[in-house]
Picture (cartoon, rainbow over the protein chains, first blue to last red):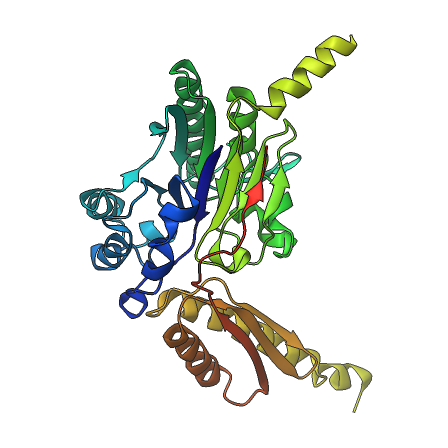
Length: 256
Length: 95
């Protein structure tokens, strides 16, 4: 069994130094790795990133992160990522990483992701340059997620997790105003996970949303924004080799 | 006074002003020191209701101060909780 701890949207600043550390120091008792789903800071400054770095430095489990929109606010995301990496955090953007959990290869593919909306109600790469840039950014994030999940599959990972900040499905946005859904996520992220396959999809960003959702391809989605999970982190247990999507495909095939 | 003049002085003008003031408040919360985007701020009747989760009690105090400054002449109700930083007491089985 693989135990995955995850939290997003911790929005740390100088006044939150040390707040999460006591809970994080219990991670070795309940989890094999910790995922951070973006919006780790408030303004994306290196100073705020150092607060986050101190919070997770030297933890007894590997820490894997993506950045969120807040971590881009100061337009220095590379510096934020560098501060986190110095503290031992693996920061992903359009790439994957493999963690060995007692001989089982666990792959995590990460991207910040972006908005655009959901199938049938989505923006298009059309019109003004700024609108095209908006949608192309989402497309690049989704493409990075798909290719990194496929690479993790080719590397023989028994469990694969997709990690983003923005949401892949509207399910986990329930509670947010419908009008802002296009700013909260994109179906392109779900399509990427459904195309490449994944055992779990973890995201944040939607503070007023709900925890549980599922892609149309059957990938379980969990919104781990801290205001949603109401804890320092959530823990999910996965059994290797139980890709429900493949099982469902096999059932469909057998029924033909 | 004609009907038209009566309409011109009717409440929708003040309701519109409150709507814009809430929008300006949300912009100020985003751009000031706390970069807060997670508050729900809604006009309900003659009052404004502010709900959401703040990362720390200091952030909650700042939000409440900014709301009071921006909407000084409007009755405001706040229900802002501070994020829970305790370790979970259970996990979810996804097998």
